[in-house]
Length: 219
View (tube, one colour):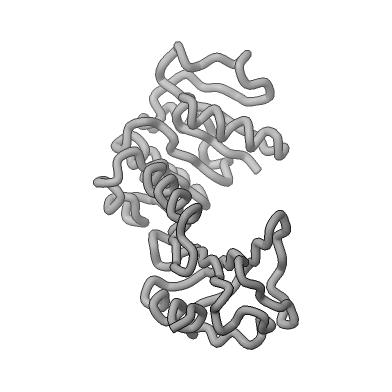
């Protein structure tokens, strides 16, 4: 997979390293010469230039990329990169970093964004996940919030504790996609028994989350 990352700051470089470790082809783009340091990330390609300018994206051959990531510290730049990648170069998958939560409403398909990642929101979700038992925690939005990856830690007194997965009566628009039990990640087969303390991962529509809570939690 070929991935172009706009922004070679700490976030962009971290993404690049992860992708290179998984044997993907990575191009880092940044307009700041102080950040274009090929020796810091072996195996990546580099382009010095403003990723908001079409000429630079043409030089980067963005049309050959499977994914483009807007990872700069400027939300306006990330939106422009996303829009150009989608409309001018028909990139299949565009991921954009949100730096300021007040700008979340802009990061939609209208701006070419397939997946928006808000660092403050992700951190808040991780904090909630660490302390909340018996309630739904949103971990990640899918397709601009049309669906969410949500986590629910099953209380020991939940009616479904000890029952097989098949006995869960989930809302129509909800799917159980994984169970985290201690250090194990379990595929939710129909016969798999649920245990108190299990972290259940669901994909659910926002409107179905209340019904999910009623279906799984006690009282």
